Length: 203
Image (cartoon, rainbow, N blue to C red):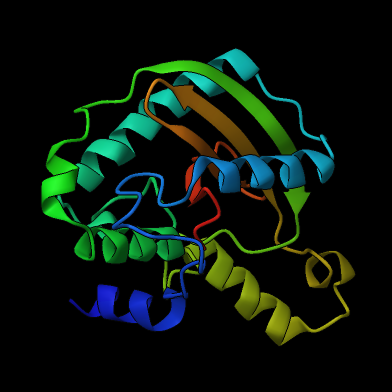
């Protein structure tokens, strides 16, 4: 399919050198490595946009398990909208290089014991999506690019409008796993959906 070919062309990124699907069939990194990453996130936290933390964590657990089950069932993450293109491709590649016998021994679902929000930041960057044009632009964003390009800096409020997204990192702990899930959403869209953009900093 052309859409997926284009997404691989623009969004495939090299995996973190500490990732290993053979040694760590889920999570892909050692717990010590993830703990170190946790400290880095907490040190860079700059909480700005308030959220309903209880609701957010509840939904985060639901989609955390959905991603886990999708991974175990060998489905293509590019067919869904709950992971960004870069993460979707990374998960697909990790799954392809995994040991099926080890995956079959994993629990069928994750029973989360504790969830903590580690950071809540704003970043001036595009929010990608598996079903956007080239993975980067929806129809409104394409229209904005065309208008600002045609008008120029005379209409300053349009010219200076930068992409903006909210990024929240959540730690989910269970009997089997210790995972950091990075969520993001587009702040320029009303009621924009959250997506997972990274897990344990594999990309």
